[in-house]
Image (cartoon, one colour):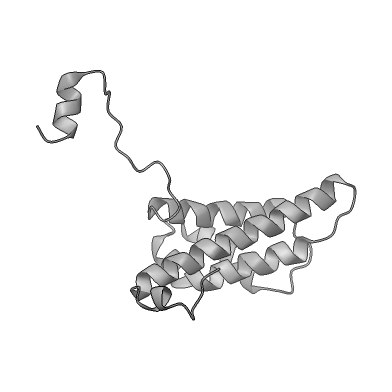
Length: 135
C-alpha cells in the first residue's frame, strides 16, 4: 500500500506515485479474484461484487490513460460499460476477467507491470555479447 505519510513517498515525482497506486490497484483486484475463485471452487458463488468494485477502482485511476491507449474503441467501451454502469447485474467472472486483461495489456505495453524488460542476447556468442555491451 502506498504510504502518503512517508517522506520517501512524498519526495517522489507524481508519475511514480501514480504508478505505485496503479500497481496497488492491480494487486487488490488479483486478491479479490483469488478470494472469489476459492469460494467458487468450494461451491459458493459469492464475492463477484468485490472483484467488480476493485476493477472499477483500477479503471477510475487509469481512465484517461486507457482512453488514449486502448487501440480498439469497442474494447474501451466494453471496459467502461462494465466498470461504470452499476445497473448491470448479469455479469460473469469471465466478463470481469476480459476487461481486466484489456487493462493489463495496456499496462504491459507501457512497461509498468512488465517483468521481462532485459534485452535478449546469446551470451555464448562473443560477438553478440560484445555488441550488446557496447564493445
